[in-house]
Length: 160
Image (cartoon, rainbow, N blue to C red):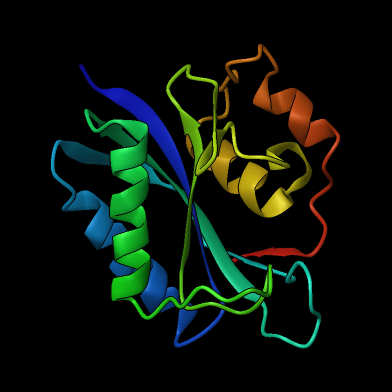
């Protein structure tokens, strides 16, 4: 049985628009998975160090039969295939970042994966693209996306 999964995409190095397009193609090619749809692309100010380029972000909706950690491994393989190197510095520049935002109705708290994604509610570069493709979404904890948007202004974003 498939579950609807929402993936956050972000890039600010090596032609970010091309990185996201390539990542969407890779997501569509995952086994036991179908790319349902994706949001518009958004330019956003970086978190963390300010001396880095702006990000391009999007959200993709997948229907998958993969288990969460199997999907996580597949996403990390896509990141590495597109030149991602993990460094000690958090929120630094990167060719590609793929995050599992929501995984069906599941609440996961494992050493490698927390779902819903932490700080989801405070990140306009996640919430607004998510609203593009799932405006009536309700999170597993009962909160509605519309409520989260009210507390997260459209600041530092530009729809591309």
